[in-house]
Image (cartoon, rainbow, N blue to C red; front, side, top):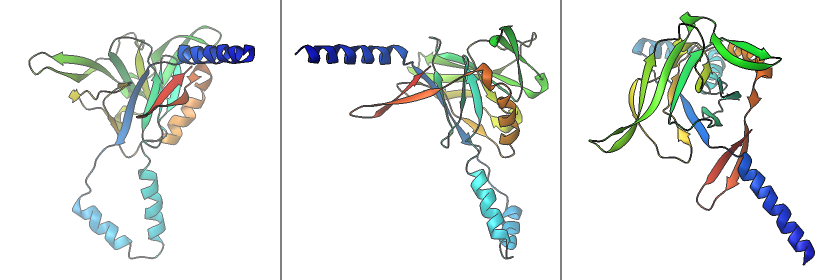
Length: 236
C-alpha cells in the first residue's frame, strides 16, 4: 500500500511538471504559390520529354518543386524552427494578445547585451525586408471573427518589434495575402497561410541561419493522445 502511494505521488509530480512546461501554440502553414503555366511552356515541356535523358531531369526538378514549403527557417520569442514537409511552423505562444507582427527578410543583426544574450534584433537591409501585422478582429454586424493582415512601414531605427515572427527568406519569394482572412477555430493560435514562390534559395538561407543558431532555443514537440484527436504540446 505504501509503495502504491509513492508511485501515485511520483506520477502526480510528473504530470504536474508536464503541464507546467507545456505552452500554448502559435502556428502557421506555408504553401506553394499557385502558378498556372502558359501554353508555350507546356508545348516546350512536351517536346523536351520526347528526347532520351530529359525525363530524369524533369523528375528531379519536380521533386524539388514539390517541397518548396519545407526547410524555411523562422524565429519567434527566442525560438528557432524550420518548416516541415507540410509547411508547418509552430512556436510556444508567448503573448496573450491575438495579434502578431511578421517580418520577412533574409538577414537580421543581433544586438547582444551580455555574452550570447540578445537584447534585440535589427534589420540588416531595409531593401530586402517586408513587415506585416496580423490581428484578429470582430465584425459586430456580421457577427464573425476574422484575421486582418496589413503591410506596414519598417521601423526607422531598424529595431525589430517584439512579438515578431521572423521568416528567414527573401520577401520577393514569399507572398502574404493582404486583407481579411477567416479564422479557423483551433486549440492553438492558427495564423493565416502564407505562400512560397519558385526561386527561393533554401541553401543560402540555411547556411545563414547556421551563423545565428547558437543564439536561439530549438522547439521541442511532444504529442498527447486524446480520444478525439492528437494534441501537440510544445515545450521549451
